[in-house]
Length: 276
Length: 323
Image (tube, rainbow over all chains, first blue to last red; front, side):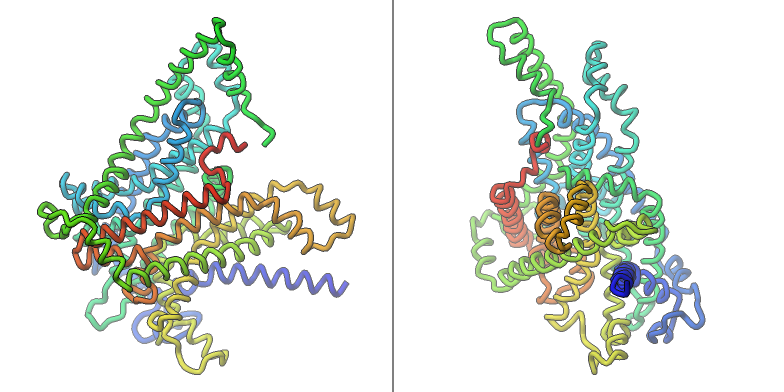
């Protein structure tokens, strides 16, 4: 009896440990973002006089609102284009057996394994040549290399899992592939498209290396670059309070997103890897 | 696996009847379907060619030139000179070694932690859904942000980690987590583990949840100790999923950049291949030399992928055939 209770206690301690490990950095970021001046440099687990000065400074001293909008635009457009281009290919790769299908899947998988640095100089040249350097369109173009193979891969897995009866009935009715895709599959693929789109959005939202290399002006930066390059008002000021405020602002919507949509995220993630 | 594809079986049957009408019909139908399939994939392929294949080809081409970032148009072909210089640079080899060490340590730790957390979450208890979400959170936030949050926690003078360790009496002077070579490496691994363990956990949890419950009931009846049950039953059953997760993470870890750029910058102890290549390419403007480094990293990742797929016999590509 005592042994069982001890085991139970150890189990809950373990769970408490896991939660602490996962959540403490966020807690600490929130606490630090509410402190300014010297109190920032004292370790106290609740700010003695909390202030939102860091949040105000973040939006006043630099175009952080603009950076958030930039990130949203780049991530939404890149995700949209990827979904649009992937739907037909996922149907072909998932439902039609044809020569070259396996090698095509191979290529898509290996493109998603590309180290970003391997395309950096080529992409830089391309983006400069078509006049998209330091623009959001250039970043959308660059992000496609991350989102497009990923979306195609995951959607293909989802397509493959659709029940066969669906298209058999349509084939009997004499429908061609385009009709089967648009009239039979697309209407019921809402959850799959949302799951995949959500993951692609997170992928593009988090992208750092391209955004760092292909933008120059503060106004064109996305959130990750803006946060990485936040500076103090003077060279001697340590901007940690502002950095933590920025982290909190970006993280809170993502946490809400994860809590609300975790079912989609998990289905998308496992479709992309376990069953892949 | 048992569930073969009835679809393809039927079609093979049709085309396997030589000379018959259905054979010819089957063939033309197949040709037609192939044409449709290529038509359907064409837009995606064109886009991939534009954003991936072309830039990669240009990077490889640049690696044989002396191009500079300030003027990409004027360059001269210099053959393998960049590669020779690269392979003679001890810093490059240090970057290769750091990358491999980083990959092995972080993916190893992520697998261990992922297994432990997934097994814990797999137990039935109240609030499991919420717990699963809590575990997911580090995965969803940008790497740059996790690096910044940890950078502040590990700050040598004002960081909470040093403060806690000092108070507990584990250290007697603050540690320079991000400057001292060994500590910096450990810090980078710690942040990566914190950020990527959720991915591992989720994939392992998904595999655990489809395991048949009967085996465990039988094991319990027979009095098999839990550890033995885990080693003999659970581990072999989730091995395929575990392998795929390890491979995905491993290939991802080999190109690590964000966390290191933000957390430790140009500290040579944490310079990986990606960081080295970008430094040459952008900071020193040496596009030719940097492209040679980038191409080398690409080749290493490509070879690793090929080895993993053939030796590990993980049929990652032909998903349809695997089921």
